[in-house]
Length: 444
Ligand code: PHE
View 1: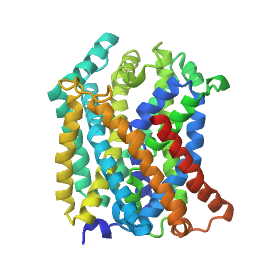
View 2 (view 1 turned 30 degrees about the vertical axis):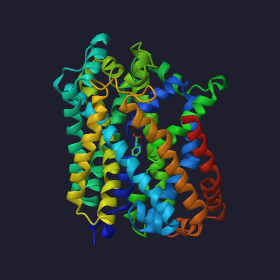
View 3 (view 1 turned 180 degrees about the vertical axis):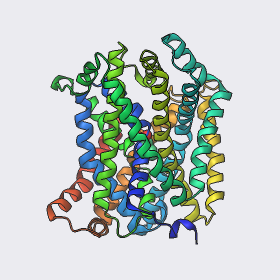
View 4 (view 1 turned 30 degrees about the horizontal axis):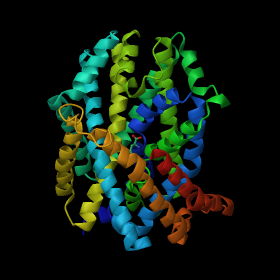
């Protein structure tokens, strides 16, 4: 018997932090402030919060319930509850996690590199051109890009190789509280700069005219990405859940921690961006170009920059380990591999695929499909097609096919009112499939 079948989380808080660690990632720190910037602040934030606390949280519960009721890797858990077709859908979830891991760890590598530079004091400069150039040089230099990708992947895989409790749970228990403390500290600095309130205003000032179909669709897509839905991460984490852990309240905690991190990231970055007269809509370059630029203008900016990149790396790492774990659980349960061998296999394969993605910024930038380089193509396919398909499978399984098991998992520890259970059922049965369809259509 593989270790994954007998393992359980050491404590409820450890599990919640591991789940939140998966949710809190580049999505919250990188995408959220930049999209809030692009779509006019509250016109994006309000729908995002709304989706997270209705459909998002219900799908988190659905994944956890399927994992615990099915007691197997994503593939066997979904097969046990829904039959062979769902085994295939579970397999797609595992594959999605693997692909995301491969290119996510390229970006993770950039975080490690920027952290090193920040600590060595070579990062902060007030010359925007230099920052843009050095970011461009990093991503287009094959050996640097691949080297940092390998460093990040080595970190993530080593943690997972240590095991669920000794690796994933322990690292989440240490790193996430540190992460929140650092974020609060940097936010305090950012908010007390002259002119910071403009940034706050920009994030929270609501005007109906800014609410567009596109902002709402992107808020829905980010809810999905940011809660790590649809690629069976939480099904796998649910497999290790004790029967004495309450699913609804844990899911609320995970979703709440993910949301408040996004908002805190917005408050950490935007006030400083405004105070220093930078462009809040700088796009994906926000954390790798605008942030160092902003910190360079603040007294003791090197220290804050270094702490910022510690946060970014912790966020990326705790998400990456959840991606590795999905595949490890699958290999251990279905192929009876040992944890260490399974991790090693994933390490080598994700390094190879991720390496190709890394090269697509440099020497292979001419190889495109539909105008997209490999990195963008994988991201596009995973977030716009594979994750929504996985989300739909979860919604149908928990909402329609294994409905009774879903409901009984929700009230296994505490009894919830009929109204709460009915609301959650409707969210999973009807609202979630509609949301997933919309994400799918708008993504395509
Ligand atoms: N939730 C992670 C983030 O916000 C991304 C992620 C997606 C992680 C899917 C795991 C699975 O960055």
